Length: 205
Figure 1 (cartoon, rainbow, N blue to C red):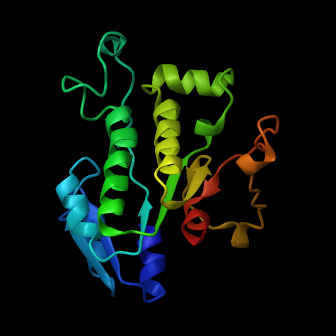
Figure 2: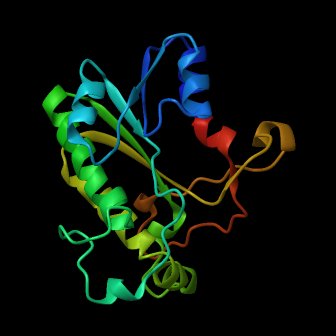
């Protein structure tokens, strides 16, 4: 929502894709100047193609809402099979991104920005990563596979691995420090400890 608001304020034309265009949040965005809201989903390729026609860039902030918790059936079901849960993180995060990238290539979109999660960059033995995987249907694993798909796509990209998103004032108001880490530091470097980041700061970035 905040990303669309920032682009609208800058006078940039925006096509916002919403699962429920009649919802309160979508209607608020549709009332902004330069904003068009269309019904769609990351796993509806036709809606992605309709939205991306004529677009220069894509900002992908979608995710699983509410979070899907692990189920016993996950032990014997391939989440990417036709019998898999369409709300599984594998379908939403990974296959959804494959659809986004396919539509980008169809329409010559030049840039993809993906909001991912900090845990997708953790080392395999990190206890937080293990906990998230066990409880949340391996969310970090599928987020990382989505990032890998972006890297292999040939499309120019930026992946933002944000820690816990918080409502409230940005760092410029609270006088907090903003710390950035990069994969270019190498595998032996640890991500700096953090207590989260304001949604407003991510939108500004």
